Amino acid sequence: MPVLGESKSGKSSVILAWLIPRLAKAKNWLFTFFRPREDPFYNLAQALVPLYIPEIDQTELEAETKKLKSSLENKTTSLSKIIDKIQQKSRESYLNYCRSI
Image (cartoon, rainbow, N blue to C red; front, side, top):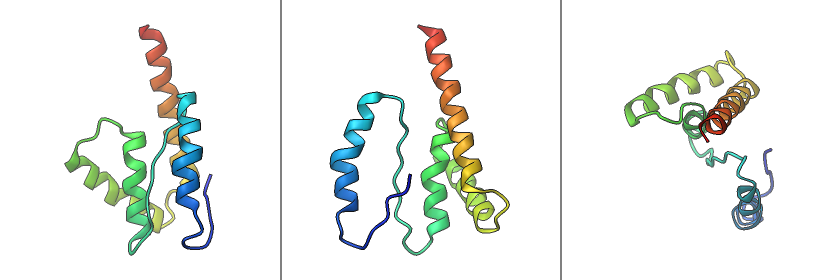
């Protein structure tokens, strides 16, 4: 869920100080943060890649970030597809965890 508002309106404060700590207690949420800045597609990709490839090393992270950036920019993939992939990986990890206990 995106949080939108004017610059300096307190979005980050509300999210970081109030919402995330409450959701984190549920232990079934994944979080990432990014600021669009001068290269928004790259920054978004860099924030998302570790969520669907959690065991990625720094070299692979850079390569996957560039690939995802290009896919997002060229509209060959959508943000909803990436989120679906992250959710699927998260469900798989949770089920594997449950099987191991």
